[in-house]
Image (cartoon, rainbow, N blue to C red; front, top):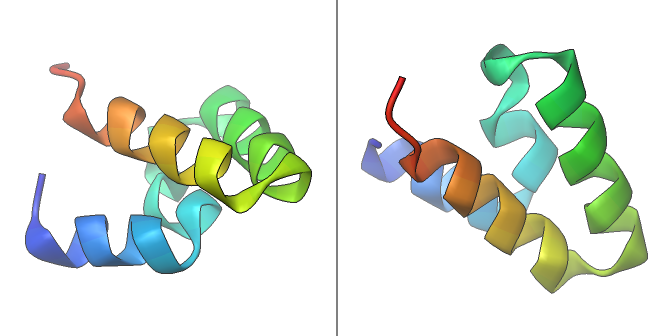
Length: 51
């Protein structure tokens, strides 16, 4: 997880995980529309997962 991705996840969460797959992107996008903080948390959790 790079510093650029973390900053991007804080500013606009769906853009930070766009390469993780369509399902992850849609989940984070919906959570971001429901509230900014759930979207950020979901993006950081997805970015922190090992492959």
